[in-house]
Image 1 (cartoon, rainbow, N blue to C red):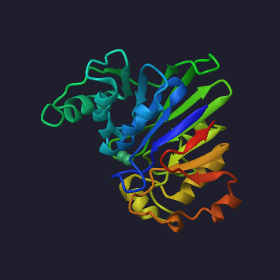
Image 2 (cartoon, helix red, strand yellow):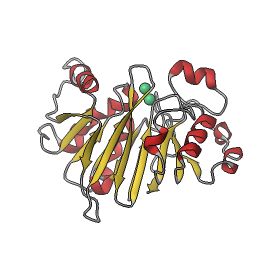
Image 3 (cartoon, rainbow, N blue to C red):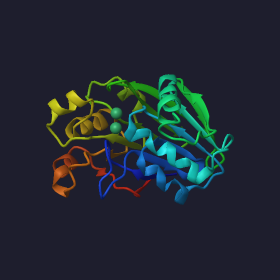
Image 4 (cartoon, helix red, strand yellow):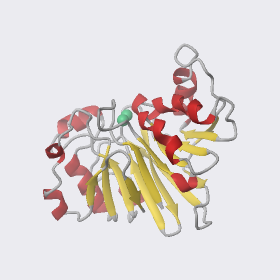
Length: 251
Ligand SMILES: [Zn+2]
Ligand SMILES: [Zn+2]
């Protein structure tokens, strides 16, 4: 299966990256709806989409307003937005408040609990999405997605630690997409902002024995290759990359 990175930064876009959004085209599953979501139309392979939101911070939801371009305003049966109830309320009452966005979109909103069934993939097999809570101002939701023979974990926004409770839930995933807003050793900033630094995320990936680690939600102000030097970490974890917009990740 394939995960397309539509947006791989946080907070605000820069010349290289849009904010958080990913799509698995063959099943129409979208993870987060940051500014990268404007690219969805180019990758749409299904009639409708299921959009799963980690939380309601703007860098993860602002792209929801772009969907009218792709689906029109009467898209009741084509777009379902899944999230915790307080996240859905924030999107409905604030992002889609008439003073902010004058076109009320007719999407479906579905409260996301501990797990849900995911659409069948190209092999005809349905999947399962399992959620887990993350430590972040206002809360955030991590997700593990499993189809037979294919597994992916998406963890953003949170402060990574090798003692994090979610390690057991993501254990053995083929692909871990984890935020590292900061390079290694920015622990104080990470704690303060509810984000992760690179060395702690590598420790999480090692502890969880995932197949591959892809770093996302990188600080939009850090645009040089050397800002996130992976050389030292490749000794700890063979497969680790920094996601770029439009990367396609197999899992
Ligand atoms: Zn964020
Ligand atoms: Zn956030």
